[in-house]
Image 1 (cartoon, rainbow, N blue to C red):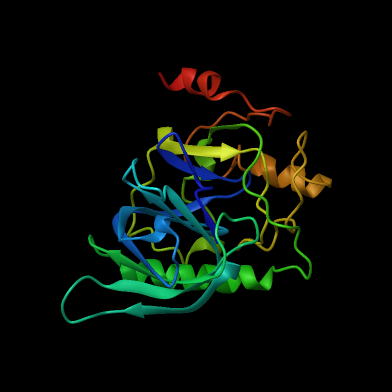
Image 2: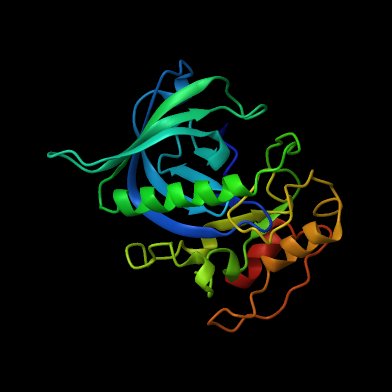
Length: 252
């Protein structure tokens, strides 16, 4: 789990080849067992379930905690709670990643004030189960996102059009994140995801997407999905992604 590594320009920052499965706002997050001031008090914001992790982005720009990234492999003792009074919530324990800007273990709670806690939690548990099957013996050391980043193409936040993802409750969470607030780094995910056809985690290289051809293909798959219901033009991943200013010109 890492602190302040999954946000950019008021939006969420994902890896090349990572896909956002669920997006939910109106979520409150609380921490226990960590003495860092970043974790003091409950945080209100948005939560994302991706193919590789859970990301929380804080609504408050002045808070020391801007974002919180929880890979499935860092979660422990996850439970779904349905109290008689108050909003349903998810609770569990998370372990810090080496180099993730904090150390140790924390207890967390996620309250879904607009509903959907149980559905989100069940999808999260299923994603964690699938990702654990793809775990490699010696994953590359974790490194925070590096290199340039740019606005992500539609396939990275649109529902996948195949039966493998029929366990994702899109009927409960039909809203996609605002595209102008989804950013992608050139680095591939440093930990396993839910898709068994994806290559294992690859160490980041400044001028590429991994150490082999499959890693580069995985990065390219985030740019184009031939089965998507919308019209998307093929874009070849550049060796050096455009700057933020250049990338956002087409959205202005």
